[in-house]
Length: 170
Image 1 (cartoon, rainbow, N blue to C red):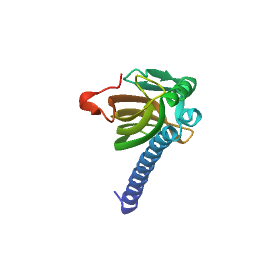
Image 2: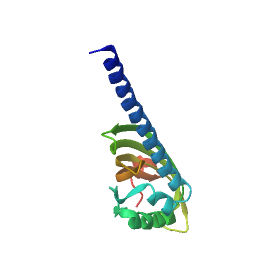
Image 3: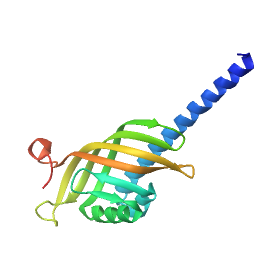
Image 4: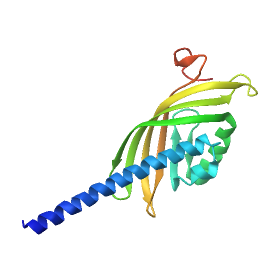
């Protein structure tokens, strides 16, 4: 292999690595926009815009499965009535770029929230929630979006009870 051919090969490899790093950073920003859409009042339009048209948003708890923009918007409207304030910490990402248009990621969530009361919706409960995300991403017209989000809520507890006495609010 000539010196010029070796240099061309190294440049192509560096360009590919740079693209992957850019894609990972764009996916981190996507997850940040997801958290912000929740934390700024559960904005249905902002959230739906982060998903592909045929996306699936799946929860392992009673929040169910939501397909496509219309169902995602409706879910956001409803959850915004139950969660009155929230601060989402999306932590520990492991993002894998599969090719130029598909990727996957795993995240942990720690969320602090004010929610309507369990026994009396007029009351307010301080809540701590934790769990994991398993995401599939797709690049559409040069922009990364969620294709499938699976949320596994490991606990959702009133702060005064904690997860030992109350793993899930009921």
